[in-house]
Image 1 (cartoon, rainbow, N blue to C red):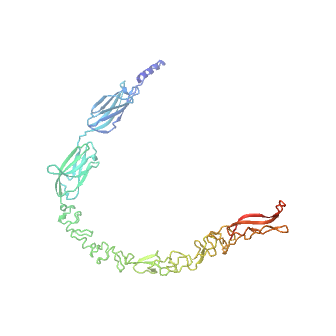
Image 2: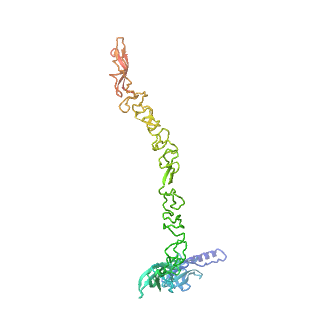
Image 3: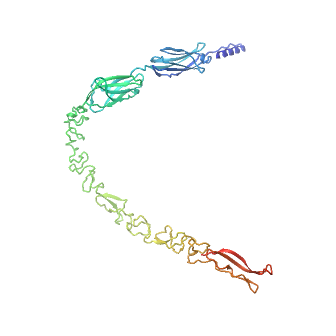
Length: 531
């Protein structure tokens, strides 16, 4: 054990020195882990006490440990800690009330340490409390037939929070049985519980019940009277609805009251603001106070339909204004061509100056631009068809289709103000517009046709062959010379066809005398080219 080792160390130290040796024994320490300060428990609940103890000189399992409260006294003196100093004890024997729980530990030398926390134990069987506010228990507060009444009570409970309680309001029979449950309330945190229900006219026995989470209940009974709404003077002006009050929510409205200009039938005679400027004399729904500018004409009043008749029908201060339902839309015709500008319009009963009903002018600054006008090559849309300088416009130029962009067009043409698309050439002499190699100024010869089977590349309506000459036999003459024309063997081939081309007939004495004779210097295969 730790004390044995300590004694041995002291004895050994004493042998090597003449000085005295003293050993300090510290107090053990105790800490309560659970429950925490202020914890709350019910009286039938098992409470587990858990703590941590330690001592520098004594092992934890050899320390003397007790649990106690200031009310119950000693709970156990048999608590034993484990090797890590953890000590626990469970009990259900702590009575209701506030307790100071103490964990105390004592070592072999009698030194001790302790730790305490306060806990609360409440009686699990204490019932909740209830006090009815509305209706007043003295019977001074009545309900109105068919109108929801706010039943209200204050509740509380020793164990539960107020918002965990449930309050029920029941209508009871004479024998004490429940006829119907009127409403159920869940209290606020301050204990105020409110719910609503409507009843018919009569005297009712009510029962308020509050229940806690353990099923404990408390009840209270009272009588509640409900009277007819027509007999209730809700505004306290001395008249009920049965007595002629036409607005029982307004204390200034009752039979015989002074009629005010306020939009209310103060005297309950069925007329609102009669004899005042707020009364609608012509029956059009508006009085002079409401803005009727002619209260003798039922067709004249605020927001009436304005028409072109010389009268301010809608009382907005404007006669025959642009809001007239039969007004026309007029369009500005600034250039005087009889066609108006859609973007500049005026709604009016009468025609404004420089205006027309037409709105199709595309350029109201040019008197020569309007629908149906002659189109000119001037960069403007003269006829207002949405296209400027379209084909066939006055002053147009004939452009031929030059699909291959060689500067020469085919016979297909358009008359346009500017070159457009493939129509870019003013020449129509291209005989094949699918190849830029075909044009009247083309000079090259070709071994393949231009794309349509023809070899007429220079558009002269002929297929000119490049090599036309043919060669005779390379023969020996009396002057011991050889002679023949360079050319095709056997005749000139057609365009694109092949043949043998021979050049330079000469005399040879090589291998004399047997091989003397005339020979061709060059004989090659060649393809006829044309243009």
